[in-house]
Length: 200
Image (cartoon, rainbow, N blue to C red; front, side, top):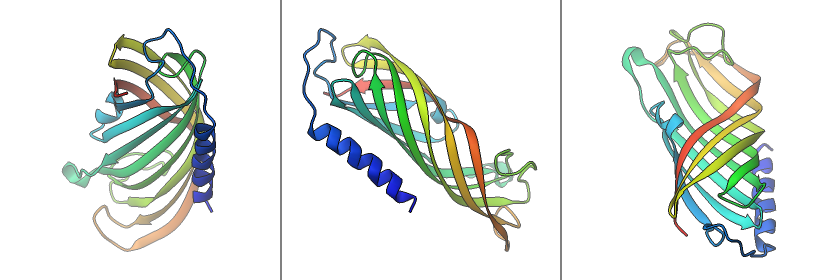
């Protein structure tokens, strides 16, 4: 059921792309339609981050980013997860230039323990491990700065809703399942400072 939202989102983008019309502009990226990027803020949390963005219409682009954290730290602390965030962006000027507003969706699978996550529990997770899935959607605002013919810098922030479905376990490594639960979250869903490389 929840995957239908992602399929509808991607199908809508495909329809936009199939009907696109090229528009000539004086901005250096008017003919550029594909970029790769990495978010420094996500990388700073020891999560691998890589994204791509491409132009789908005169003022629309599709951004897709993915995060992956495989690490277990001292005292068995962990924030393991895989997350993907597709986002359809509307540019006030044109893609890869200036202000934009976005409609984002997200999916994550996570396995966390030994850290405090207020949206899961009010207690520190020293003796509890949470494993489950996250589904969400939201809106975003951002800005891209032109640095050179091949490089841009982007800042973005997003707010939205997420639904978390998870199981809790008695200890961080193993143990019996304590319970299954779900929770809703409303708040920040994206924060980024990204370096962008223009491929085409």
